[in-house]
Length: 237
Image (cartoon, rainbow, N blue to C red; front, side, top):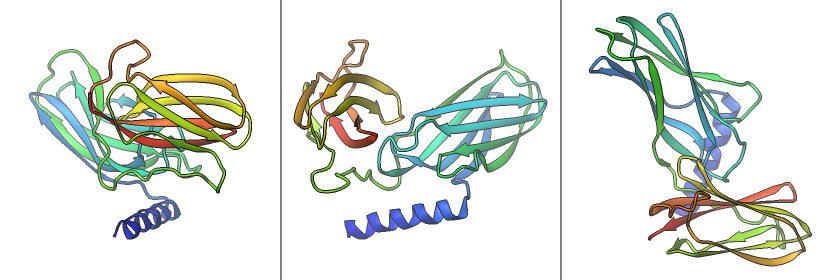
């Protein structure tokens, strides 16, 4: 059953790329004179490096969602985005949501638009954006591109510390990074040039600021020789 699910994900992804259509559903609501614009089931990489930009021109609001990296992980997920917009003047607004998930060279595509009414202005104008954890299909872990190729391995569950193992088919400069489920890079280790063969490093499950990361799902990413491998890791604490 799992094999068919993975195959379906691959076919769905190819269909999405072929049609060039944006994903998800856009809606809005107003609570206490604050607007919330939702983009549910947005189809992005499992561990994207997301940036959000909200531009306001009169009573039209354009919201841009962009993944900065092409393939942080070899998998796709449904995400729910919520954009909170405060301090708007009273009136009727139209919000348009644009997404760029790096599938092609077309740039931003319109995911949808929604309208809402602000009864009264409350507070100063400001915006914030939030993203859910990976939803929909489970992460599909990357394997070696061919026998003897670049490989990465970690335990699927861990308590501090965790040993990260990798195999280089040839000498290369190596970088290992850890991301949380919303794509924030928490820890980076630039290992420099390493000889071919098997290597091990240890992550103490702390951020670069030295703070223990909370229990949850993380992604370990290895970069070497122009390739990358990513695996999911659950920190138990």
